[in-house]
Image (cartoon, rainbow, N blue to C red):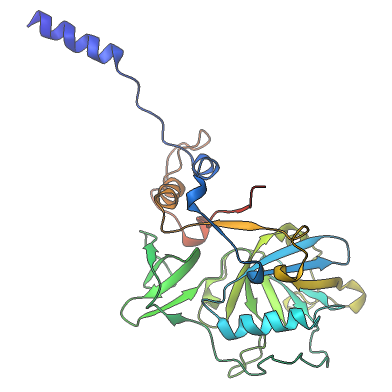
Length: 294
């Protein structure tokens, strides 16, 4: 018996201490190259501001194909050249375009797109969030995007998370062409889900928008056109010479690495945290995106 006790003690003394779980940041930083997916340059909308700043948007043709096709046609037709940011509503959205100007739409733009507020769930592989969602029967991730979905109805929709881009429209049945766009700069307005076409997300430069002076008129519109923020150029990534083109990658949301990241976001073990929340909101676990390594 004494020998067994000594052996057990020796095993315990020699055993390595349990490893501390990796933080979400560590998981992303150490993610293998195999879990990153290149973003198609044709899905990048690159907006250069008159101030010299740049905002890059990833488009989501899988969820709003007609609106995204319109946006591509508008970019190729230089429709936003000389347009402005004319609305900045605190804790809500930044909006830009020609603000009901009479500039003709380029060839190929569908004047009255369908209401692309959700799509068929069929064809999507969804990783469930694993926690209740206030705005959809279920929530999770599909094709690198956060989605609300309804398995019974067979539908899925993109969500209004921070930085996400939607299409400005008038009252229904108007659906907006894609010429007037907005980006969320406040607490996620998920009540807009399935009411407006969400067409993408800002993946770089959101601080250029969120730091703008707030509009003082109703809904955050600027009082004077002199306050509007000029937009010098909007192009697709595919229109920019390869040597100058920004390149990005998004993490595969079906990968084991993303699953570990999601668990880490729900159960924070960073040194700062005293206790884990044991759950996470869909918009509080953003899909990791990075500049493509050289």
